[in-house]
Image 1 (cartoon, rainbow, N blue to C red):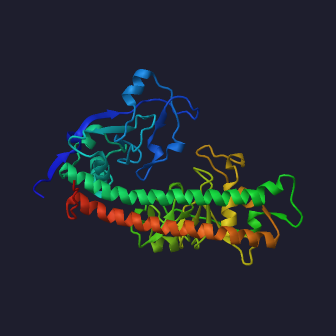
Image 2: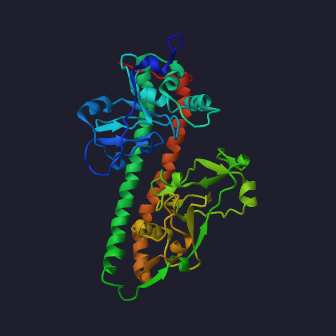
Image 3: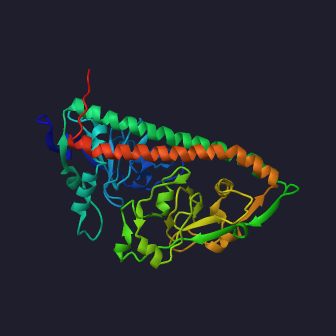
Length: 399
């Protein structure tokens, strides 16, 4: 490894810039306006990124190009993403853009460096003791890491990118499968009820056919109840629900078993539908395995001899516009458990439900299987990442 050298992030950059200060707009005027909240686990969902109005001069100054890396300087400190495609976008002021000098380093290699545990620990260290969480371009630019020769950088990036590409393919497949299931549900159960309930159907409240429970959060000041150890009990947050396709298998935090017992936090069974009803209302998922959740999430346990399945409920909840429901909190958007229990659901006759289940069960089974595949690939990538970045595992690019 004599050809590897220690460098600082700023030494491989041709430009380091703070983002543009402006208000985001849903109106499709101007370029996309990338913010910290648009970055989740190193990925950008450009479909949900808003727009902004900007002068031509500022547009050229803040325009994002392929290979640019943006890093959050507040909020989710150190969260980063690389611009993979040529897209008409600028970036917001709480992001810092690092433009890599491609004569010195491969941008995609650097983007993986910034996903490493070492970088996360560095960001936490420079921010320790700060009253207001935040970092700046100088601190981030001073991050030091081992840099292999350019051909090896590209080879490492290609190995990791091939895994990420497979993960992205599975996510897209899951999205397509869910859209298929939603189309079928609307055709079978929403369109037929536009002019009233067909004969043999009934309308009941969710509280009548489900045991609806709410999660809990131990006192945050008592940090020993919380854990980052996957061997502890998975604890679902609204943020976790925002990062899934259909099924939730991973959580960002865990609770000690003693916490679950002490605070009587209800255990959520496998294959149970979840709904966020505070903070961000209307995020929906289905559990894989037993879990617990915080108090912003409701879960729907099937009662014995229930006619409908979790799949049916999931698709039904996906058709609802939660913005039209009841109360809002002065602090954050919210509805309450009483409103959830009183939501009306249309139940068709047994034969129709059975036919529908036979049609969509294989779709959900495939989504669930893909979710396990994604988890396996993510573990492989996360295992390889530090070994490749340290030179413990070597790869070479042959011409």
